[in-house]
Amino acid sequence: MAMNLDGVLADRSRWTADECSVAKALEVVGSRTAMLFLREAFYGTTRFADFAQRVGVTDAAAATRLKQLVSDGIFAKRPYQEPGSRPRHEYVLTDKGRDLLPVVLAMMEWGDRHLQPQGPPVEVVDAAGERVGVSVRTSAGDEVGLESLRLRRGRRT
Image 1: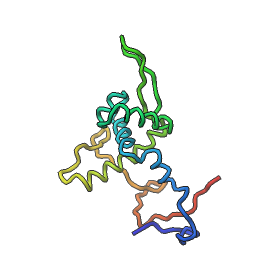
Image 2 (image 1 turned 180 degrees about the vertical axis):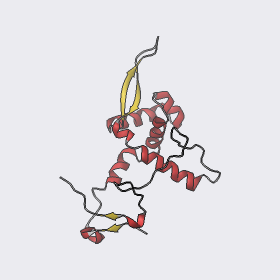
Image 3 (image 1 turned 135 degrees about the vertical axis):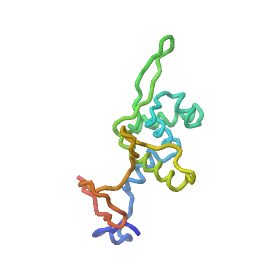
Image 4 (image 1 turned 90 degrees about the vertical axis):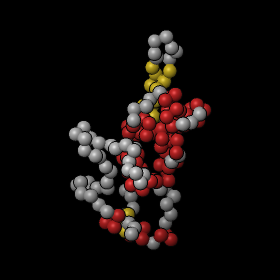
C-alpha cells in the first residue's frame, strides 16, 4: 500500500523530492540526541545538566545539540539564577518546538507497538486518565488510512 500520487506527481521519473519537508525536518531534528532532548523537554526538563544526564551525553555534546536546537528555533534560552549561584540559562520549547509533540508521540507509539514486547514503559494519558494517541485525520476530524491518502502539488506562493 502507498499514497496515491496525483497529476504530474504520478510519474515519479518527472520530479524529485529536492524540497522534501521530511528531509528538511530531519536536518533539524533527525538525530538521536535531538529527539531525546525533545522528549526530555516534553517531560519538563529545562536545565542543561539535566538534559545531559537524562539523555546520557557529555556536556560538550549537550552544549552542541542545545546550541543547534536554539539556532533552529526549537528551543529558546531563558535566564535564571538560583540564590548564591551565577546566572544561567534554561532551555524551553518554542511554539515551533511544541509543534513537534505529535512527532515525538508517534515515535513513542511506534516504539511501544513494535519494540516493546512486554508493553509500553510509560503511557501518555489526558487529565481524565484516558490514553492519548496520534492519528492521521482530515480537517473535518475523520481518521484516514494510508490507502485513502493522495499526494498532490503544494500551494507555494
